[in-house]
Length: 490
Image: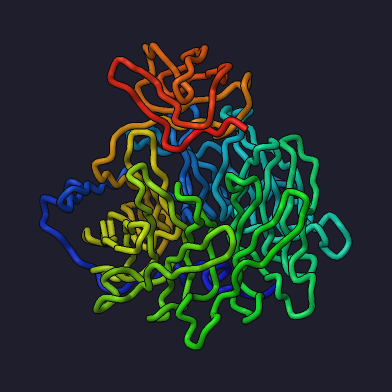
């Protein structure tokens, strides 16, 4: 397997120290930093027993808690962690059994059946990674061990996580195996199918080594990136149909100096305008990575080149992808750069205006965390949540602290989100949010729906007759909440 910068060189990645800057004693004691309209709060520090070195974004579960993974900690194989909204962090599941996977670089997805699904990079029957299921009750089950086919034709070393498609199956990628990595689907029960094998053509013009996962666009097709391959060997953006027909939309480093970026590492996100937005780990005008958008037809525009400010005050090196907030802007993190050279959280408008929201390691000893390898997640309270690979207050992880979970509030209001985000009339839909108890009305683009409040963080509703694609509205005692994305009625 090829060594990829920032994938396997984990110990060296986490220990980039750089300069450490201190704030006033009052701010350091509080662990909270406010930058004009932004408020940054360190919610929890990992302590090895509950995990170490998270590399993936958190998600919000139907029970209102936050869930994620760490690639180490527990018994050294990594953990699935649970964190309450107030910041109580526990190891909900620990990897390391005889046939279990270990080192889950990827995060989780909660499927419509209520269970969580994810991947591990190592472990399993063949020690090259697994797909697993994790229940709210804490049961951890291995569904599939990679390299179960001759020549690892089914793939090996899955770095990316999973998505649940509209057909109910889970889709993901492996970074190696076959000829250059794979795209696969797996049913919630474990039935596995290889959808595509990369580097199927001489010279790998179709791409090689997909580190980031895939997304399903509103068209029903899937989109993703490869780290290597393409016309210039430095990565691609591709589209693949559910039937497995792949089209390379863009090959990076299309011009001298790679102004369009190179080596895309993260998953894409589809904006409300229909275009796809993503990041490259390096390349661009300053060789520090780029933020780009690409139309579904393949026209790529570089929105921003990192390290455009003196001393890379705007950030340097993008491992993570973007998330579109409810204000229409995109949010993300850099693992280096910023005022303290330890990474940033930023906002970028759809037309490319970037604002640094927070510079990590702003507290003495990096108590607020440093090196945020994972992207951000917007909770239904409107705030953004994320993790840092290092920093924090625990001394249990040896020569460097174990990492943190943080919240970044930028003044956005509460909303609801639906699982799934599309369905025909009669489909049962979960609606997640905050303070949903006492809800009096649920409407799908104006059509009233029958619903049940399961708990303060979850409502189940049935897509009503007459529903059309549009916003889901929930009326609660505290006000009317709207869905963060339109619910599609096919």
